[in-house]
Length: 177
Image (tube, rainbow, N blue to C red; front, top):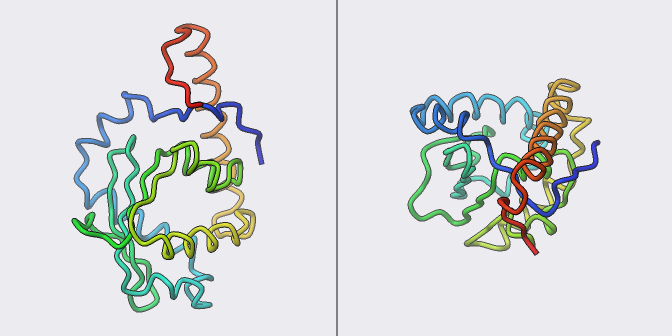
C-alpha cells in the first residue's frame, strides 16, 4: 500500500483522457465494468455477502470519467446498467478517490468529510456498502497482483502529476480545508 501525498486535493482525470470517455457510448463503459465487478466479487456473491444489494437501486457517478451507472444484485450477479433517475442511493466521486478507497490509502469517512465521496439517499444502505468494502482486503481479491499494482500505479501517477502542477502553476489548484 502506498502513502498518498495528495490528501488535500482530489486530482481529476486529465482532460486528454476525459474527452474520449465522454464520447464513448454508455454501454461500452458499463458492459466491461459488469464483467470486471462480477469477477472481482465472485466469492462474495457466492457467499451471499452482497444480499443487501438484491433488487436495490444504486447509482454510482464517477465524475471525471463521465461514467454514471446503476448497480444492483439479481440472481447472484452484479448488474450494471444505465443510471437511474431516482435511485435509493447515489454515490459520487472521482477515479482518484475511488482508487484511494480501494487500496485503503484513505478510508470512506475521510473521503466523505473532505467531500471527495458524496452519498445521497438511503444512509443505511450506504453504511452496508461502507462496511462491506471495509471488510475486504484488496490482496485477497481475484486478479491480484495486477489489480493492486494498477491501482497503486494510478495513485502514484496522480500524486506526481499533482505535485508537478503545484510547482508549475502555484495557487491554481483548489485546496480543501
